[in-house]
Image (cartoon, rainbow, N blue to C red):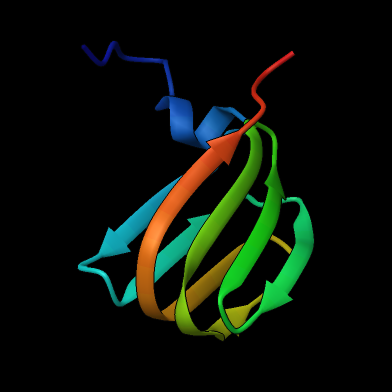
Length: 84
């Protein structure tokens, strides 16, 4: 429930926002940097842990310091680690 004077958690926290469109596209907002970039695996560091994508023909449609758009055949997504 939203109370006046409070902002949504996604605007005030450092946690990533992950949006998946089918199995062809994933947008990650608020990542901390690229760890692995291969055709079959992409890994990004986030405040919630290491975010890994597995699939085929993975590539960046867009990449900035805080946001990434990955396309290709995405078969699996996992979040390893967690908040301290």
